[in-house]
Amino acid sequence: MEALLCKKIGDPTVVPPTSSDDSSPLTLSTSHPIPQLNSPTAIRVRVKATSLNYANYLQILGKYQEKPPLPFIPGSDYSGLVESVGPGVSKFRVGDPVCSFAALGSFAQFIVADESELFRVPDGCDLVAAGALPVAYGTSHVALVHRAQLTSGQIMGDDGILGVAGSWGSWRGWGFGCTNWKALWCHCYCCCQVLPRVSLKQKLGAEKVQFLESLGVDHVVDLTKGSVTESVKGFLKARKLKGVDVLYDPVGGKLTKETMKLLSWGAKILVIGFASGEIPVIPANIALVKNWTIHGLYWGSYKTHKPAVLEDSLKELLSWLTRGLITVHISHTYSLPEANLAFSALKDRKVIGKVMITFDDGSSARSKL
Image (cartoon, rainbow, N blue to C red; front, side, top):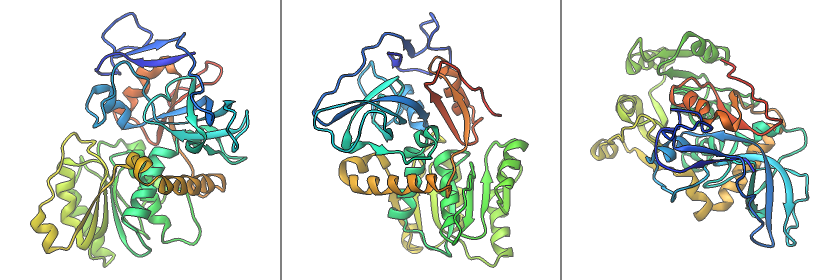
């Protein structure tokens, strides 16, 4: 089968994985062994689509908290069709559309998972979109629903710098205040009241600003042109709002320090990640005085400690996707041999939505931007 192998630590954007140049950490294998069923309840899935997440990029760079032994096949969330089932499988049949996530292994034509780890993709649901769902949407859903317990009327700050997890966090925060669910993507750092929405963006071109505004975002701040705190404080004052109740922060660094100035008394801080490369310091004395609650969220660890939370979360997300209550914006789609381009789009912040690798008929749709 075709599979993308990480044989050494390094930057996956430098050269194509098909290149004879050994500077790339990635190698495209066209004859990698197809994984075999390893238990009676194991299922082999023919992968249709797998998404790129920032964690995948960090893992290949050797900068992620989990460092698998070399060589390994990267990749986490995916969708596809059931290709083979073990004798003890009772929930799925060959040909069923499914999606799931794994610690490793989805950047390949086939992957094996236990039936308990798979989710059936409902009829009428786009399979590529389902492959983009688990990590990004799942992170925001668990963070806001289970950790922050966001409720209608609260103000949410989303520190997403065009990231998908943050973008859906913005939409989800808005959705809590609505009786008619709509799909909104704000791929940015944003502070948003449940109604209205406020978004703040870093390194955005006019096209990205326009995209946010097309989603109905009320207040857009280009961080290259103005102060986050001054702009948002002005907006909050105009709307007679006191501050941000929930800060969703996958970025860290200086932006966290600045946005903490916007937090209200009793605010909740969701520590999602450090895409800026800098781990922020949250002063304990300020947290004490202002009664802040700081929640760490390592989404993947729920699979070990509270798998039922992930199961309920993804089932609800798939239901929403099927009913059109949320949509997945696919920004770039590539084939496996173009993995360097896929990672480059992520690294260079050219993405408005998800970057996908698809296994189809060998064709690859180029960037929509």
